[in-house]
Image (cartoon, rainbow, N blue to C red; front, side, top):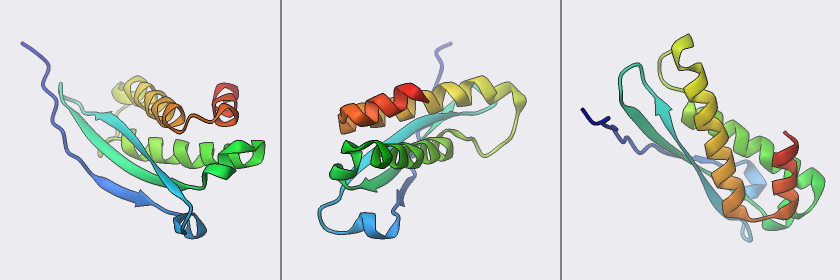
Length: 115
């Protein structure tokens, strides 16, 4: 029997004060949170950032921390189970990788490769 996916699109905005100002842009961090059954739940968080900040090491580290926090939120299911830990980790890595690739900053990519 094919695996079914339940897609629940939850759109949240993770905006840290000044990042929501003019000149900022948004990256979608999304993942497929595992469940105890054979379904997954798709969740999305928009992270606002200033493109200039992704171009230097400290800004890239700060943005990567925000992307990672968003990935934790989208990939963590509503229930807790040790059986899901490896699936949660895989979801988190993929969500961060997609967001970093979308932004396309070499400095951010380098920061992600270090972590």
